[in-house]
Length: 366
Image (cartoon, rainbow, N blue to C red; front, side, top):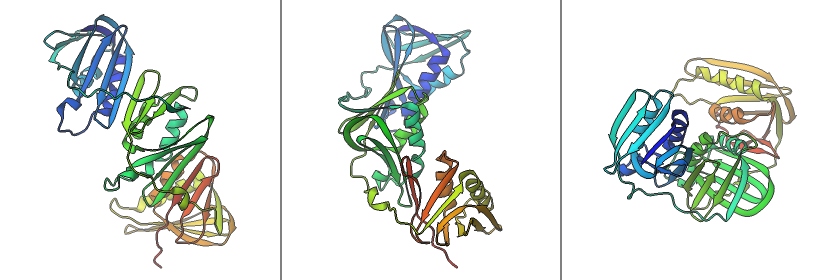
């Protein structure tokens, strides 16, 4: 096996496949990357048995071949090499020579025969969406997945397609995040739950713009994301997702419209008084055309008023400030509308065409 490639492209490719290297494993082979050289390209493959990534890069191949290498070791080596061409050789005894500029490395490789390569996925059910849009939809919902492994279904996100409507949803029993969009064409109905870890890594790999497409294929047990040079395969989470439609309501007694940036900045300032281990709510007093915000902690207290437009009754309600901040940071609009019923009922921050966020309030103790 012998090839030459540019350091920058190789470094970018190895960083992509590193995302499927497990942090801890009882199977050392999963800490490796498969390097295949055929024709005029190199293919890198990693697989932690739940998430697998394959990416291709151009190269000058002098001798075809396949070798297995410790992924983090070779990634560290490539990252610190000078910005010159890399010359890579592996002999019949699986010894590897790597040259770059005046640097030379010699280290052992392994046979790839026992490595679990990525499964073949039937490419029947699929959707096509822009990389930019998918990345935005993931980032606008993934913060409300649960990290409680005892309830596995909540550690993933619901992907649901009905005709030309695409919806992503997540919840952690304190809040619900929903983002939806209209696709350019209609597809078969699909309803699957994808691990949050997978989607977090997918969002980092999706670097394309609005015109760069990603195809998403769905099978019984897997989902496949296919871009120009990269394929990501993940196992799905088994089970039925919560019926989020039952949690949503259009009933409200108070509607408040407020400048998003002013609202976010005010809550952010209130959290300056919170100690790291302290969990105190931010209290909202909605009256007339203003919201008075209050925060009382062991360090001190603050209050601040911001302008708003109110329809309906006055209300006093409290929330975990982190939950509000998470939502406000991912909404692009200048103004947001909150729909409230009473101090114990969920708050909805929504735009009927694109997003819907549900946040449960904190009980007020007067």
